Image (cartoon, rainbow, N blue to C red; front, side):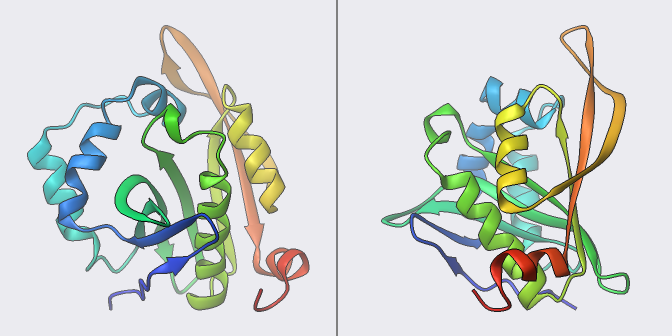
Length: 186
């Protein structure tokens, strides 16, 4: 069963399902050193691999992948994802990546996070959404706490980056926390 992936509209950004035509934007983002570091992405990918990945996302039955776009421009500037969706347990993992530093500190990530959480809790009916954020990314930790994620613990030394081990902070939000913070249909 393909999960519902309607377009989602915010105040400063829109989210739309990722399609094959987003491959150039995603491929360019994979060349941004800071974005790669913040997401802990260590692999390298060919354009053809990225294009095939983008092409298969819409019909996936265990994830919803959205391109982040500006209100007045449908061009991919990043992505926000609920993956590893388990509809029986009603939980999922969350991840987000902006395509480069030119998109940081503008509220795009905060709004994209809010919109995908709203979709997850109110449309998909999830109970729990979790994430991991590396300890060297306090800006993201702040955003996640601001939108309502709760710190659960730390996975120690999970990423080796530039010769130094980094830990991952585990955070989650539950549906009752979502409702308490945002109301049922805000």
